Each structure stands twice: as structure tokens, then as C-alpha cells.
Length: 114
Image 1 (tube, rainbow, N blue to C red):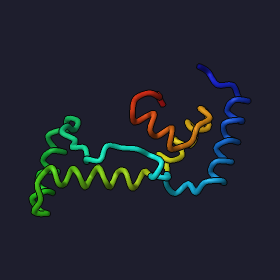
Image 2 (image 1 turned 90 degrees about the vertical axis):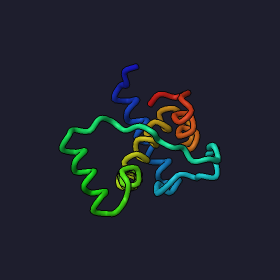
Image 3 (image 1 turned 90 degrees about the horizontal axis):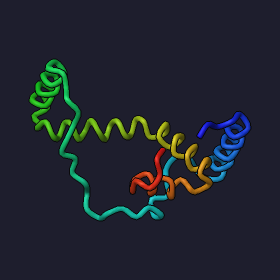
Image 4 (image 1 turned 180 degrees about the vertical axis):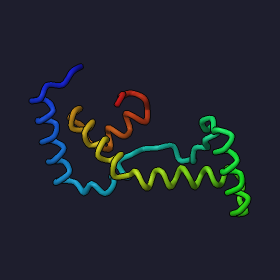
């Protein structure tokens, strides 16, 4: 579905209103229902030989296993990009006319495609 300039402007106004109304620093996690257990991520994308070697040496320098270094890398990525991801979430929430938390849950559950 192609958005018109008027659609984009209306969405931008809704995002501005939501951002003003809610503190954009984070979601209201009390409204988000996730499974209690932590999810173990078993896969990563294929790394080049150089990147794998760098990861391996970094892990050894830190005295950690590869999985621990990859976990730290994922958490660091999520923290560094949190604000940008929230902006994207807010845009989709405004487009759909639902809360950021509902948008998060629908994307998580696979019932809403960003």
C-alpha cells in the first residue's frame, strides 16, 4: 500500500502526539506479555574468516567463550539502537492506530508485518 504525502503527514503528526504524550525512552513493559523463560538464540549469520578469527581472538583475550562474546554483542547492539528502533515502532503504531506496546507484541507474535 503506497502512502500519500497526506498520509505521511498524518502519521507524522500522530507520532509527534504519541511521543509528546508518552516518554519515548522506553515501552511500558508491564503491558507486554512475553514468555517467562529467556530465549536462547542458537544461530548467527555466517561470518567471514577474518571476522570469525577476530571474534575468536577477542573471546580469548577476554577469557570468555564465543557465545558469551556474541551475547554481549547482541545486547550492545540493542542498547545502542534502542532509540532508533523505538522511533520505527512509534511510526508503525501511529500508522496502525494502536499503542507502541500492542505494535511490539503483534510484531513479536508475527501478526503484524512492519
